[in-house]
Length: 266
Image (cartoon, rainbow, N blue to C red; front, top):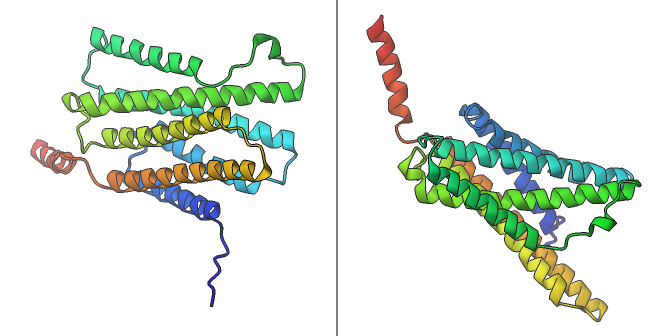
């Protein structure tokens, strides 16, 4: 007797990812984390929305409309992702003074490294090829902007996450703080996606299939890389669910002291 599973690996991973996002949103709402991390919450909502669009609209809209929708959501996600990086850095280095030269130098260094890698990574179209005179050209520019913006966001996320892990304890972002736990999850997800992109770029530039079987093998490898990245995303979501459900060290004592002070004042 053979057991047949009616779902593909991609469908199972999609379902687990979407379910984990919904649970995470419930945790953020139920444990009152949204006020502290509004942009992080917004990024999870956009992530879930992109998954819904991927399933509900695919094959039901014209190709150009679907591409425009995907590109718009990708650009919005990149913008919100950059705001999440700023939000995490602001919470992590809350005790640093604005005039701290060390902080300024680190900021400049992060932007310089991310900008340099972005400029060298991947093909860039020539200025002569950029145009706004047709819908396909506009969609191409939107896709290019989304791709490069998300790549910049991922690199800054990894860099800021590394700084939070190394120096966050000196300020207010120790190991068990929600800020550092969010930073670790973001950095892990971004690093995994950058690794997938880098691996695929190497394959695309150095491997040249000569037969249909070789081409199918390469495309299958690409699908496995994407699925591996989805597994990492699910692990990160579960990490956030557990960490954000648990109170930070000292939070319970602060909540207990507040009512005591109120009673004493009366």
